[in-house]
Every structure is written in C-alpha cells, then in structure tokens.
Length: 182
Image 1: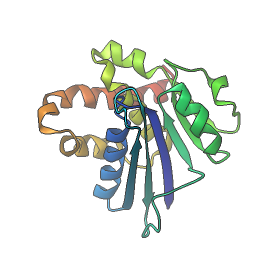
Image 2: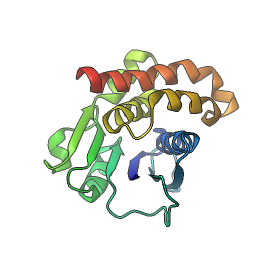
Image 3: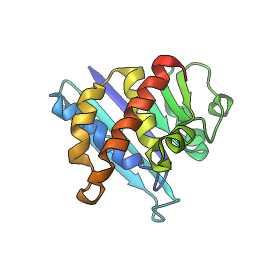
Image 4: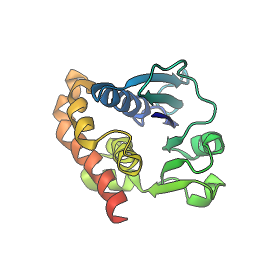
C-alpha cells in the first residue's frame, strides 16, 4: 500500500496540523509516513501546504508530483494543486469557498464539503480543516477515524487541549457528511 495526499490552503486554516495528524495516525497504525510542510512567509493568510505519504514499506522521498489525492481549503490552492492529482484520485475541497467546476476536472472522486459553514454550525470556524480531514478519512479509508481521534490529543498543543472535544466533533461531522451526503 502506498498513498500520498497534498493538503493546501491559506495559512491559519490548519493545513499543517491536519497533515501532521494524518501522518501521526498512520504511524500509530504501524505504517511508514512522511510529512513535508511548506508555507509562505506571511503565515496566517499566506499559502500553506503539506504532503503526507503513507506506505507499508519504507518511503524513498516525501516529494510527490502526482498525488493520489488532495484536501484543498482555498480556491487559489485548488487552481494550483487540483491539476496535479492523478486521474481517478480523490479530491476533498472546501465548498464554502469554491464550486466543483472550479477544479476543472471531471475525472476525480470529488467531495465538495461546505467545511467553513459546517464549522460555524459547530461553533468554531477554525475547525473547518478538521471537518475536511474527517471527510477525507471517510472517503479514502486510508486510516481510521477512531485512530485519528486517538492521535489528536498528542497533535494539539497544550494550550489548545481544551479544544479537543470540538475537534473530535469536527472530524465526525466531516465523516457524517460523506456518509449522508449532507
């Protein structure tokens, strides 16, 4: 098994955190992982992306030109990274900021989820990336949601531990959106 994902959006959207969480979850499940973050100098509001590679075998490089999938939280990131996803791959995109036709692709297994709208309903707009990750996990099955929830505690910084329940709810909301289509 070899699976890679590009995660991208604006700085401050939690892109690097969800990538770190996915990599840690896969590692806790006994797989080899790499997590390679990148972000603009602006941080919040600038660009942020990361690549996560998950494999049953040793990983030669964390770099991937044609990922199997992408989790995209902003329209500029969609325009930059959607063309790179392999045909037949998975695209999870934030429908609060973009429409399916913005991807310019009809050969992907796409989930357009209104992540910001759903996060606002949960009471914290900053959980939108966790909602997208929950949708991604449900769509791909690359890790289990239960293991992601277990890894979440060690991913959150100490000062954010009080946000653990809402982040768990966000992961579950993303999963439920894929399961129920709403």
